[in-house]
Image (cartoon, rainbow, N blue to C red; front, side, top):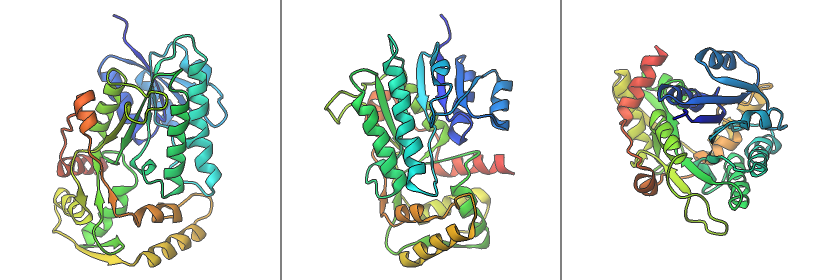
Length: 314
């Protein structure tokens, strides 16, 4: 049998690089739609067909879809200086992709990687991801679409959670945003990639007008308190359990606003949109549908995942 060909958008990112290597290790072929970069060149060296393009303009999309049996859409704007930066990628980029698929005689199955942030949609990022989901739903009768909503994704190469927490863990004191409990759903990157690949092969797709089938929240099934995450990372790093100090949310918002003013060009990791999400008390999910319909079985504990990430970083 001919090896399946996957089109992966966002293949140069944290999740995309791990997913691409997993597909190749399984004998599949990968096409990546990517802008010119050192990471794109590295993909070519692995044997990936890299099509130069951009979902914000649609350039290269038709060529990238040629011959694709399955499509996994990872490309996203995680930070933006203005709301338009989120909408241009997270909504309009999805629209260009599904319209291009709908124009094909036999559209490939599309797996859209969204986010738990799309649920409450209290941030601009979350609202834009939900808008992308809605665009996909509007084309559900023309394109077979599955939506995967992961919680916090971590592992080797991740550039947000560990860089923020690890220096404080090593100092023994971690600052927590807000008072009261904060619960999070996390998933190790390779477990998420396994779920994404399973979603390209099995399970129901979105049905027009039916919000039920084809939507899969993904986590390892646990609801972690912020202190649980800090203790697991401390164990992985060989440190003592840190002292967790809460900071009032008004102070968090003020620091985020100052961080944006202090950084020119790039958007800092702590920004006003991220602060909106930090004020939310529950970022958990129940992955029962993925377990039942995709065969999802997370294999990595939180401490194991952190240990793997630290080995790669060292």
